[in-house]
Image 1 (cartoon, one colour):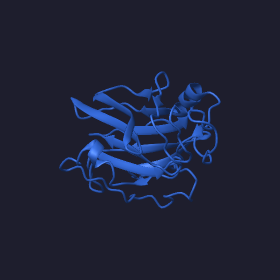
Image 2: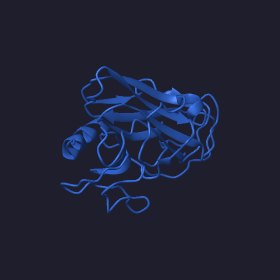
Image 3: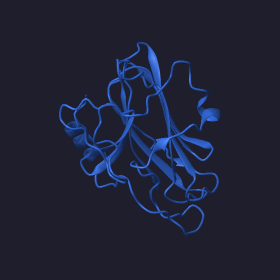
Image 4: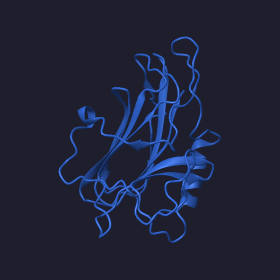
Length: 219
């Protein structure tokens, strides 16, 4: 298990005074000059069967146990984040996890044990918090801890808005932990997307690994 305190320091250094989750839908403005702000709320992700035409069909044996095990305090109240108690044996496929002043979406995969199968294919969904206008740029910030198995292998992290993949990173396994983002080359919308457009976050993974979606912003 990784160190939340260490990651929090790295996250604060990366984002400075930037915002995490939350926000309200934006309206008004001219095309390409929509009100900036967060596009998603990391406490509102739910499992989804959408995206097969973009990600393909789940491979054989890719069952993901979505019911948490040994987690009496999970899920947290609506709109709040979750902190694993010290020494907790809680297992959850995805968690809106508290890191300092941020809420990140943590996706946990692990080798099979007597409680749960390996979670190697997971798609989550929520409606966008604000409208996107043609010309708006979208920034995605993610992180993964050290990827350890299988060797060799490959993991994929993908974000979809509506019917377009706006962020995709493929990572060879093994790999040390790293931040991944598109800040130097943000995705630019070619058309308008209304507030409430489906947003998908997808993880294709193998082995005992951990992935974080930190934030998605309209710039």
